[in-house]
Amino acid sequence: GCAAGAAPPRLGFIGVPTSSADTVVVPTGYVAQVIAPWGEPVGVAGAMPPWRPDASDTAAEQALQLGMHHDGIHYFPLDGARRGLLVMNHEYVDEGLLFPDGTAGWNAVKVAKAQAAHGISVVEVERTADGWRLVRPSRFARRFTAATPFAVGGPAAGHALMRTAVDPTGTRILGTLNNCAAGMTPWGTYLSGEENWAGYFDGGPVVTADQRRWGLRATGWARWGDHDARFDATQHPNEFHRFGWVVEVDPMDPTSTPVKRTALGRAAHEGAWVAVTKDNRAVVYSGEDAAFEYIYKFVSRDRIAPGGARANATLLDHGTLHVARFDADGTGRWLPLVHGQGPLVPANGFADQGEVVIKARQAADLLGATKMDRPEWLAIEPGGTTVYCTLTNNTARGAPGRPGVDAANPRAQNTMGHIIRWTEQDDFDATTFRWNHLLLAGDPANARAEAKGTIRGDAFGCPDGLAFDPRGLLWIQTDASSSTLGRGEYAGLGNNQMLACDVTSGEVRRFLTGPVGCEIAGAAFTPDATTMFVNVQHPGETPRDKSDPADPMRFSRWPDGAKATRPRSATLAIRRSDGGPVGG
Ligand code: FEO
Ligand code: CA
Ligand code: CA
Ligand code: CA
Image (cartoon, rainbow, N blue to C red):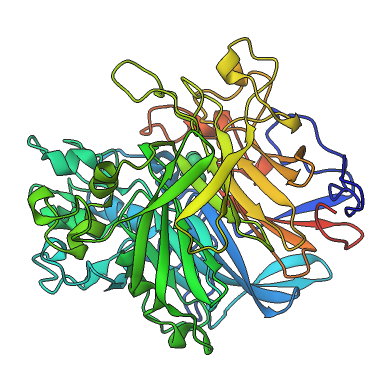
């Protein structure tokens, strides 16, 4: 219930039950429309190759079409809630779906198409009497792929560890990879995190301690190094340092060069989210989707300038990076990652600030930061200094030889995940904070004590996406892996889903359930909250032999149904039939 005098309950919809059906379910009175599936041309004038249902599109065609595995998304208004740009991430690819014959005959042509299906898309959308549609052609339509040139800003730009044979200056990097969450800046740009990029590289027989700390293995899962030497770390070891950054894109300027912002630190960044201090400096929060890794905060040196993206073109290149320590007494501290301070000195392997940001994990290790249970999305509560963060899960917590539980990550074998929140002391640039848990996820019916949830309302597991809407409702999206969905401790939770939480009462209500094998990823809103855009990623995913292209069709035909040739990630535009605010 609500506190006396507070606004009426903000969860104005009737929740939906869990589902294991191969469809999207939303509450009565809502309509979810599929737009922008993988393969649709983004709308570059004169270059709009239609998607071929047998997946025989070439790499060059794919580079003009929406990529695979839609993730974080944001709406940039061109005309309020009627017309705007959708900018979205394409996290990775499923080779069994991307090619007519899966990984058979793996070669350079297939690697090039896989690279073209990664990255970021910019599409223009408008709302008509029949709903939302892509505007094509559009002068804004654009793709950023694993081959697009990026500039580099911040202390690692030009650093010796960033220089390669093809880029001896260390300032021009081809591509962005494994982009997950979306954040946006007050100056109108889009931030995207390069998440678990290590699996795109092959480390060969000898992997150094530094490379191992970052997850490099002898052979990466993507097998790009077989046919693109850039991803063979035995030949080009520094290319590995050129990923793991937050990238900034200006969707409003189709000629702009995207930039990797190294001052924010290198990590398996899910994404990055911007708060503004009272004196108008930018504070950027980020986590990394990796077990036992960290939560970071960058505080800009300079104030946000009026004048949009151009006026703030180097704002994120100067400032102070910190990492979070959560103490058992409910307080916490932001520890600065500054070269020359404390242990961050040459004797410990940090020659300069560039090396501190490139080796942010090792720096955070030395500072005694708190190892978290896969910190993914963050969300900044409107009107205060409270920040929320999803911790998806960490089944290795408390395992032999691994870190045990701590106050912030209180469950051994954390299969269900949790959501933590902290309130900064006074302002976003504070060095101290107070924290608690919004909730521990999981079905309260689970037998194992550590898997029982503390949710008030509808149960879920594995929170990942997280966003406040313009009305202040907190939206939670789940990403339980397809190897566990519907089984064991997840048996009662159904397919991955999306829920809304009224953080004043703590109540959680299930709003949407996704098709089989998908995760729900990314939420964006029109400024009036009458449309919510949500991504459905990897419908039909199943642990399987990726060389079998027919296999996923056994599990999902979403969204094309009877005429499907393969399941496709796609964006949903969700509206209330009466035109009111979504969730209200
Ligand atoms: Fe890409 Fe952390 O999900
Ligand atoms: Ca995610
Ligand atoms: Ca995830
Ligand atoms: Ca996923």
